[in-house]
Image (cartoon, rainbow, N blue to C red):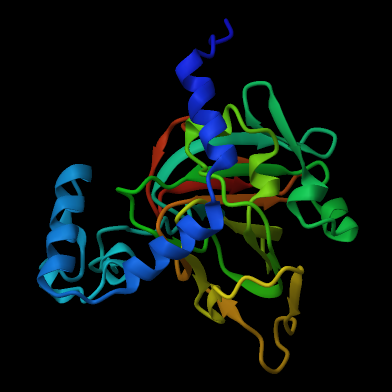
Length: 294
């Protein structure tokens, strides 16, 4: 049964269309970097209380250890609180959050929400060759809410071959808007990372959103800001070549300054998702994502 959209729902959607996304995001980024001592620590405490964040998992549990809100938001965790699945034929989940959607890429389309699809080619910045690689593959979209741990990790060991920064909109990516704004993930700003792995090629995409002031990777640092108006592409050496960038399974690969979404894409007949995963499943870094197709 289709859910009826109310007048209030329509207003919420309309508000996001007219919201000055870039200016709001810039303001959020500026505020999140400020080091205002007791004011910053009070904001952090209120945030912890509102979202019931378990600071016992954090490497630094005292709010006074964080000079800015951004330092707190991308706080590292203590060793062992996110154990990594050690099965060599398995991939692990890259982020804390909830599964937004997962499944097969059907005729070059990915499902965003019930009744809404978006183009694989659009998502991959119009790169026809890259899109062809994943045409009939598998994907999983993980939504990170404000309460979640916001560092992103590797599902498996991989060698980075390409990174693409795609300028775009900054719509919020919460589940409500994913149901009501068409082509949301292929319209928003994003960082596309292509890895060669033992499970075939894999793309891991960091999707920006309203007040997601920046995204970073461990090899390039903060990608945005600045926000160039054109697509930017970087190429990297193959495995075994000088200067290669190789990350191990479970290793951190990037982070969000405020919440957003991670999309993972795999080629056809390479992986089979764990049977316990479905829409809205709560997930954590290191848990079982998929097995290699035998």
